[in-house]
Length: 232
Figure 1: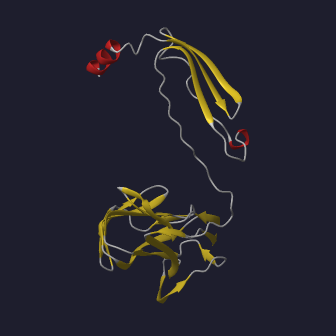
Figure 2 (figure 1 turned 180 degrees about the vertical axis):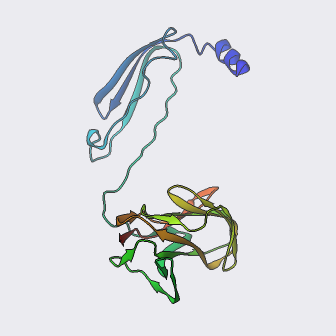
Figure 3 (figure 1 turned 90 degrees about the vertical axis):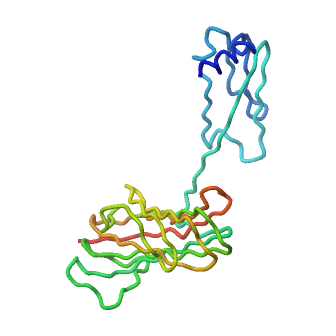
C-alpha cells in the first residue's frame, strides 16, 4: 500500500483541481469541485432510482474541467415485480420439486407425495426437495443454490458432503438457502436432494433455485418460483 501511494504521488495523482459534472442524458445530476484538500472526502457517489431513469436509451456523461485524473465505475441492480418467476437456462438446467415424505414428524409415507402449488402443508411435516439438474456438456466447479421458503428449516443440522445420482457435492446450510458445490458435473441429468421441516404457518414465496458455473457466469439457470402454504 505504501509503495502504491508513493507511485501515485510521483505520478501527480494527488495534485488535482477540477470541476466534475455528471449528466444523465442531457440533464445535469451532480456537480462537485475536487481539490487536493477534499480528494478523499468529497461525496463521490450518485444513486439513481428507477423513476429517475428514462425508459429509453440514455447516456451517462462524466465531464472534467481542470487538472487531474478522474476514475469512475458504475453498476446496475434491478429486480422484477412479477408474482411468478419462470424458469430459464443457458447450457445448464435446474428444475425443483417438493415432495411430502413424513406427516407431522410421526408417519413416514410409503410413497412420497408431490406437493403442487396451492396444496396446504401442516406444521411439522417433512418435505423432500429435489433439484433436477442437467448439464449439456461436461462442466467443472458448478454451484446450485436453493432458496428455501421462509417458514421452513433444513432437517440436516450440519453442512457436509452429499451424493446425488452420480454427483458429489459439498452442501452448505445457510440462513436463506441450501447450496450444493460440485467440483465436476458430467454431461447428463442428476437429482440433488435435501429435506425441510415445515415450521411457521403462513404463505411463503420460495425464490427460484439457481445454478451457475463459478468461473464462467454465462453458464447459469434458474427454476420456477413456488408458493408454499403452511397451516397449523
